Amino acid sequence: MDIMVGQALFLFVCFILSCFLIISTTRSRRRSLGATVTPPGPPRLPIIGNMHLVGMNPHRSFADLSKTYGPVMSLKLGFLNSVVISSPEAARVVLRTHDQLLSSRSSNNSIRSINHEELSVVWLPSSSARWRLLRKLSATQVFSPQRLEATKDLRVKKMKELVSFMSESSEREEAVDISRASFITTLNIISNILFSVDLGSYDSKKFNEFQDMVIGVMEAVGNPDAANYFPFLRFLDLHGNSKKMRDSCESLLKVFHGFIEAKIGEKSVRSNPKDVVDALLDLTKGDEAELNTNDIEHFILDLFTAGTDTSSSTVEWAMTELLRNPKTMTKTQAEIDRVIGQNGVVQESDISELPYLQAVVKETFRLHPAAPLLVPRKAESDVQVLGFLVSKDTQVLVNVWAIGRDPSVWENPDRFEPERFLGKEIDVKGRDYELTPFGAGRRICPGLPLAVKTVSHARFASLFL
Ligand code: HEM
Image (cartoon, rainbow, N blue to C red; front, side, top):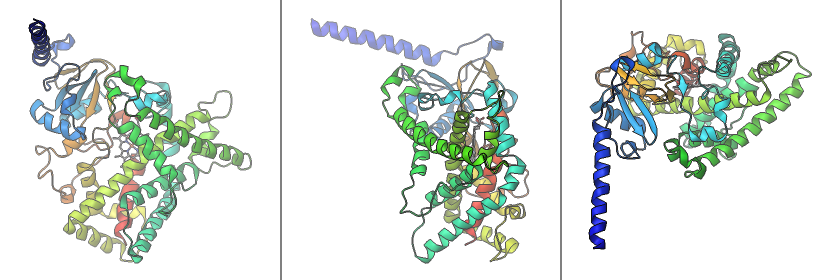
């Protein structure tokens, strides 16, 4: 008897779950906004929604799914409603037509664990006055043409150090860890622009604590975390991401605090601002000060975490593609020899004379965008994208990785062929929606001018051995 009751109960539960599944997969909700339909998407399971369809590389899983469900696709990831964009037309609507309404951010569990979303230029909504101030400071104090011009020699110096390190390693017949070497170069470029010191060292015997802290933050933000999809699990910190984030950020903020304190001491004897932190400290003075030192520390944290690995992994991919494509390597080398000469000195101004090198960099951005889904955006209100409804608070992911490999956009999309860019106007600056590795619109990467210089120059310098 007990067995029969158990079986009946089991069948009843199965029936309820099946109804739930059928209703959730076949419905096409119509809403008031011009009777718009929610974007199509794969069938959802109870509770987890579509999470079982997302692998270790979500951009690849989403690219596969969008072949079936189209360029505006909805997914339910636990409790999180998401829309994934996978065509240049749809990206244009998100990043340009509705840029303002789709420029909020969907921050994650690790970010919230240190309340960084309240101070961060990356995670604040674009409607916030503080975000506008931080973007203004990025444009005027950090990445302005004047600041970039003033730090030109510094970047050349850092590139020469990279070349020397590689030459010496080659003389000693020692293998070079390209990933580490390019990370250290980028780290030192950024740390010198910000506060005039080297934070990284090529010496492998030296324990590179700072590098580990930056990587710790990036891992804590990027690692999978069930709490991002089931907020009620936050307090458990199942994956240890919140702890990692707190530990790494605490250490990094302590380092920045030390530099800032030293700068405040220095500034009492020197009035001219020497670097970005000097300039920002000037804005902390007076009763109407727009910033305090804690704001500066969080701003610096954003610049390091957003700027180092993105730039260095792009250089690493470019190297990898050139090694995999010897003909392209030979052509790149030949162009450099022709324009600069075999023993010439590397200058950033030379890059404009090197169209093939620039095409190599664009091709690297097309195939290997450092942020394949950009940084998650969030809808501030209901919006229509190509006739589909994106409801308020939905997370919007633009799959630039999928767009870069779409055969209807690119010929031979999986091949590394820089020639496709020669003689074409297409660029990465956020106006060509088939190639937006830096995003576009109001949230476009503010570090773009520096990143393009660093990546092109690093490629250039290391080929010049
Ligand atoms: C190859 C190098 C880089 C790539 C591919 C890259 C890519 C991106 C992308 C895709 C976004 C999000 C755009 C969006 O939401 O639409 C972003 C935002 C950002 N990037 Fe970069 N980035 C790079 C280098 C840098 C550098 C060097 C810095 C600073 C030193 C930097 C600082 C930032 C900041 C602060 C944001 C947040 C902007 C905001 O949300 O308003 N990035 N970046």
